[in-house]
Amino acid sequence: MSELISLQYSINHLIAKIIFKVKNRKFNLNKNQYAKKFNQVGFACFTDKNIENECKSILQKLNSEDEPWDSENRFNRSASKAFKKELINIFNSGVNEFIQSAFDSDYYIFYHTLYKSNRLSKAKIPEGSQLWHADGGPGNCMNLMICHSHINEFNGSMKIFPWEISKKLLGNLSYGYKRLIRSDLNKIKNFDHSRMAYRELKCNLLAKYIKKNAYKFFQPKSKTSGTIFAFRNNCVHAGGFTEVGNERIVSIFHIYPSKKQTSIEEKFESLHLKNKALPAPKELP
Ligand SMILES: [Fe+2]
Image (cartoon, rainbow, N blue to C red):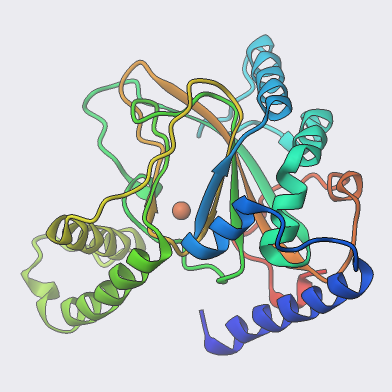
């Protein structure tokens, strides 16, 4: 992302903070412990009995449908519309306050995808977002995951490195990748120069640095539904690779600071369908 565009996202956030401060003088921005952790480390997990119950209700509704998934295991229509009541309750049970505290501002939901991770064959190997990567989006985009299933190492609970380690990994990656592209690319057998091939190169380099430094990742685990797992999109992460016979169902939201103040109900008036990866800075409300 260019420095100019990155600056535009930051300016948008700064204005959003000022507006929020003026309009919500009584809101205690330092109160939320999970938001503090998110801002310090780059991710945070929490849950609550209401969130657990609403996630169980979403799972029940999914189970009652004949085929709610598309060919890529994503919910086949707007999950924000289908589960609006449950999601509003989840946001009312600490998620809304967490996001506002983490951003010091109100927020805008850019998209929401609900999907299922499973693995039907042992021969399948990790690919795409299941490999170590950083999303490379704007620094102030929050990825917020609502885990409708329980999560553990067997059903593909996402793994992540704190921002301090991610920074080192991404620094190494930037240097190593440039060197590889400039001089060593012809040594790689059958390199096809596709976007996926370049992405795989980066993922493999990251995996190499992680192994070399023996960095320890964080992987949330829960026995029941309802874990909220928020993370910065530029923390190095990998997720969703399940052991055969296990399954994980989660929602992922991409959330941005917003200058416009809206209620939770107003935020869920939109379908939150994913039409593109990023909003242009000037599109942000
Ligand atoms: Fe990702």
